[in-house]
Length: 591
Image (cartoon, rainbow, N blue to C red):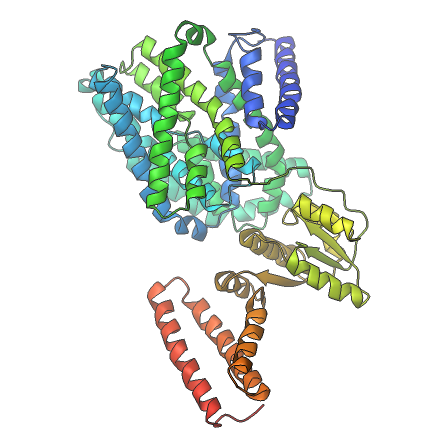
């Protein structure tokens, strides 16, 4: 390919994206569908501006790799471990049930041979990491229970890659002449162990050396080198690149350079994912679709419906709320990009005839087109009001930054303003920002957990950061970032629950539990209503507050031991009862 051809193709891709994506976003259809339709239009089956979508698809898959790496950076190993029940329980059931049901339908209903049906079922069981996670991120739903369950299922699908490849090798017609590689799993485990060891011993010092050069482009090159190197290592032992780079991201989640990695790789990830979606659109065989529309569309719709039923049922079985189960069913209803790989392997092993291979690929592409529409339908059904816009430009700086200006942050802001202290106010709800502006507050829209936004708000020169956002994970990440980068800035944090309070206390902070003190006041008024004197009621509340703080510290040390927490809770109730009984009997000296 000449340089002129390369430049022309780059121009076509960029022009298609710039025209289609804003249009589809304005229509409320989302960027993913815009990229997919743009790919169909410029592809070999429509305007024929691009003739080789397969080459582009292989290159652009690196965008999915970067997506998983960046998601891994947001997850500490402890949070991944917390997903183990969903990961191995829900994930394994989804793969097994979908594969079995799809294979049975192909065998009994379509009359395919059992080994062709099994290969088809293996591909149909996969969902699209790129479409599922990108759509959830775009709609700010990845952090919801349904979004986290979707992520866990996609992660398990990546884990199932080697067993599925081994299954295809066993059932292939040429299996009798080709020995099965039973060392594949041990080799994969060895590579994973090596990655863990290198990340803990070599990688951090090396990143520090690169960062000390002060050259942003060198650190950016190192970031790409890291992701490419991990991809090559895991792919060499048969693992998916996505799984390997996700693991690398998790291992770097506590790194002091995680924010630089995210800022450097985010734009590249976005461009490559867009290119990937366009390549998927280009791979839609319109001639096959025109010649057999009822077969391809009918089977695609059937595949989507069957997957949605299985996913919704399993989500409810694992105690997800109906709304969250619907979200997961819509997000993972498509057949994913890894099905292309599975079908290609099956074709090479003579498991799939060429006609069946082409038919299955067309079905996969059509199911991918359906997902953005299903998520839009889900969003409207549950009436989720998610408005997206670019963050505001923050002008000037103050000694105090309040991140989150809802009912909690407003009280803090009003007190500080009354005391003569002005603050920079940031909130990630555009409706809340507009409402506050109507009441005269100079409030900015944006995600205050982002490193670049905090820097723009003047965190380096601030004396105090008040964290009052409604996202516990983002709040904790923000506190860690500020303590690491600007230890001289004092942090006052809001905790929504005892669990959140545990996390902040482990950072050495004393969080303010948002409903704790108002609940204590309600308890004091309840005691007064029951006839206690004001002095006794006040002392009871003081004793309770002191006891609760001590118990919170005790529970924090054993928070991962459920039995110990239950025992502490039971013992705490007895101790508190004895304490208040002694108070009533006058054996505790009055403060």
